[in-house]
Amino acid sequence: MVNYFTIVEFMLTTNQIVHASVICKTGGMGTHERRTLFQSATPGSTEWPTLVLLAITYAVWALATTWLASLSTPLAVIVTAIAIAQFSSLQHEAIHGHPFENTTLNALLVAPALTLILPYARFRDTHLDHHLDSRLTDPYDDPESNYIDPGDWEKMSRVERMIRTANNTLAGRLIIGPILGTACFLRADWRNRTTDPRVLKGWAWHLPAMIPVLFWLASIATLSIWAYAVAIYFGLSLLRIRTFLEHQAHEHALGRTVIIDDQGPLAILFLNNNYHVLHHTHPRAPWYKLPGLFRQNPDRYLKQNDGYFYRSYAQVFAKYFLRRKDPVPHPLWRRS
Image (cartoon, rainbow, N blue to C red; front, side, top):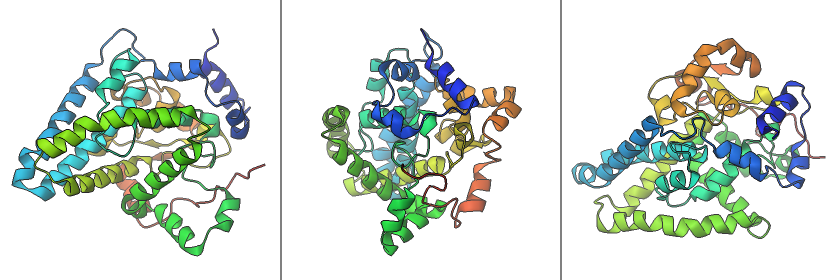
């Protein structure tokens, strides 16, 4: 059987990249390729670090919304936000086949909709579509791209351009990124509801996933629903630090994905996805192995991504907190 990643590696290293619009017309990633992205890198084993961290995250979330909320609402909001961000990172692990080989069991482990507004199934579907590296950053065919078609940019109002430009600073991404990103996500799902059967199915599964969270907030938690809404926003804001410069516009697909050599608290919160080119190269590797993979051969990965590298998140904050990281209109792309 032909391995999808072998084909992609050949295409990338020989620069024979299929344009995203062609792939989109064929329906995107096929069943076998999506299954490959789901599979664990250690078949038949249980990845205990992931399982233990998930249990701790649920416990922190529960304590923050009950006991801690009775002591200090602001502190409870902060801790709940951190737990929500950590949980979202663990959902990302589940999408890629962790901690068990059984994908259904993995999905059940992260099924509760702690963010209330983002269905896990839709996160899974759009994220796996994003993993077709030949279309990374494509304004139309990469669901996680923050770039705009230059033609669409020219048609935008001055206010919308200002908002989009602000969103390309780290400060803007933290402040307006959650609402702008969520609005774009919901708009895309509304637009695709009749053409992509996964959309309605994903939202249908989201409804029962909300029930235990809403029950907890209504009957057990001492944190108010309004404070919890603020925690959700803060949690999504934290995640914007990770996604802020994960990808850049580059002529070659291998040069589009970053390495941030940070092993501090944010690296744990994001489950080492700051070593993002390693995640895209080894999408089935568990989070706790990514730094080690980088240390084994750093020159290989830095050559692979054409030196798209930062020493730490502190460097990212210092460089881009109030400065635009790149233009909003895609600098290398025009729709044919």
